[in-house]
Image (tube, rainbow, N blue to C red; front, side, top):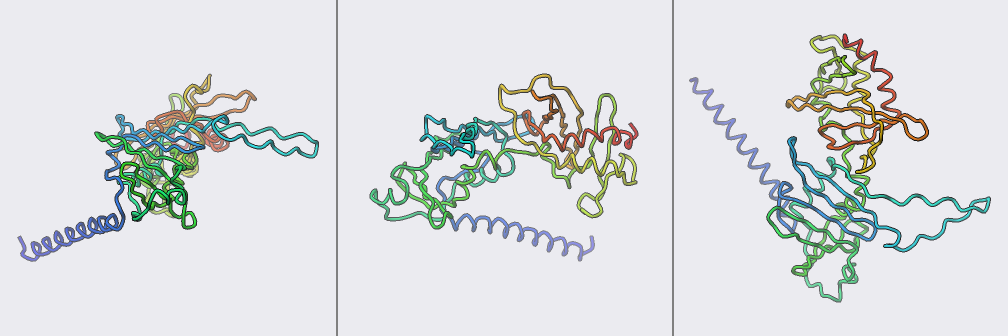
Length: 345
């Protein structure tokens, strides 16, 4: 073998090893700059429970044939558990507007924001630990009567409970107390805000979990007809286009329709016991990724009590039935025939 090739190979291996050590060392340094309240890794978590006056959030880690995922359950506190709201002011006619309906419990699969949350909880870290804090100081920190509690359970470990106090320093941080030893920490308040706004930020709205740049093929199926399309130049947003599978020419009908389908997001998860009746199959589409991941999205429809068409979907990624925005799906449904014809079906 050429001596210079061996030298270059050794230099390359050394450079790669140095780069890996630098990357892992920087990661360790970032963690070393903080105080670890509770060690662990996201894959070791089994459940997380956040309890506050207005909300209880439970996160359960589950696993199926497609892998591990997190399932959330929020329970708003009822009016009897909280102080009654003042009566709404009367309008110009002297009649008070109707009260908004009370929030209901929700269940949903967690999305990417949920993944980030779990990474912040395992390990659970603080900016620093406060020293010299006595019992007389707890009220000033909002910990005499904690505003909330956080329970973290790891596989094979006892559940650990932490008390959460009030925000400090303009809302950038929050005090956290470990009842086990009385230690008090300063934690980034963004973590707590994510828990407080769980129903807004945590549900997974994606239908496939596949990045659009990683999609290789999309197949539309309506009844016994189907049409398949292939993506070209996926990493170049300006040059990206779709063609009929096995062809190289750009297909404008496929471009428009697939662009809408891949950016389609759910509006909410259908709750247990609330599955709509008379659901009919509208169409389905299969999305194949570069890593051989294949997800089939089944789109269903029915009519509400006012005769308005409404759409739902389910897939291996959603792990449950979700509702879709009517306008976006109606537009996609109207173009099914043209897309099938464009694909030769």
